[in-house]
Image 1 (cartoon, rainbow, N blue to C red):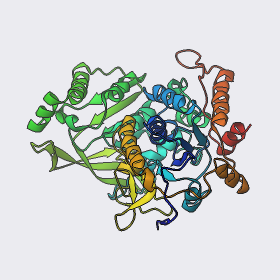
Image 2: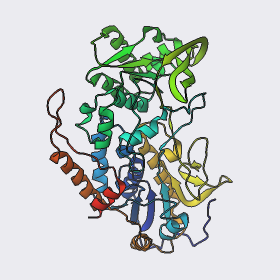
Image 3: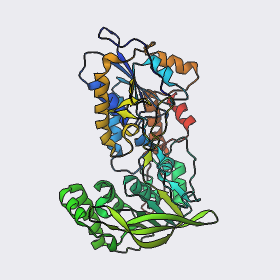
Image 4: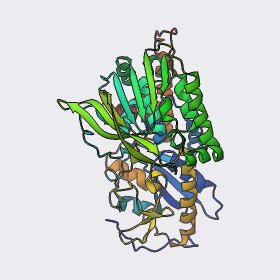
Length: 474
């Protein structure tokens, strides 16, 4: 239930800075803060960026594969924004537990929710709940060292199915098929390395429902598959039939053309090198059922699809079974409900209009806003959240004179409240301590022997929340 406030409104005569809280310190939250600080305005702003994790960066730290080719550049950009000193970071603070909406509205004139999406979208087919069936989001959280997930993962399967044709599916399949020692140059946590090192996997299959011209991969991530050592990529010529809509898309869209060319070149150049692991790319496969015995996954059944001339697909009535011992669904993320706010369960978003949060009747709730995946759903690349932030911040600035006035806007109020409740919040200076500590762990590690010689660790990510807080707070 949304709480409506009736306090006086912010006026032109206000001499103090506009107090803004942003809930979520991932890319969406940082972009919103950065845009607000740089916006043309005739008044000061004071921004606090709050996050449930002790460290900043959200999706970049806990939702992207450690060997992702773009991750370093994005981290550097976010670091520069937060290191300027005009945005305050407060980590290890959980909305709805450590702070209520009433608490926040007492201290801030406007609140922007940028909490993202960390749950897996549901897939309703028979057998999806068998032991050995996993959500990709859970697996990503594990291999990225998210502090609130188990420290181990059941990597017991030799043959694995990954369902989905987006970048997350590629990340999951790449991590599953890659040799663990080749991830040592990243910040992979020690417990993740030890589990992956003992994986018996030989074959990882990526299945997409539509054709090669309709995939949601991006070219860089697709090409990254071919860089894995001792992993053969296997494609199937029967999957490469294109209808009129596909041909038109290939001709009109350079990104689609690049990806299709990459895939078709792999077919032409395909050679069996005798690698110990294989990564299979399948298209035109619609999952029908996960099969099992004694409660465990033993296989997966698909109906073969065909393009219908419009770029969409229809069933052929032909069914194919693949023996696998694990299934990972990478069909999308879903946002989580937030206390005291309306929530669209189907889309996994806070109902909003241009970033303005709506109540049950569809009216804008003064002072409440949303940006990023919790605003529009988990689609698009990380950079697309900049467009979300521009719209949301533009509407917030437009609403400025009608914002409810915080009753306790002093910048120390949030610190005093957290300390009174025993919340061990972390800060930007604390993050720099943790950052330096993780780098020092890598430097101090004994070079790990690998098939290509000893490997030095660039850094080792700290996983335990208590340890992160202890280091950050000094």
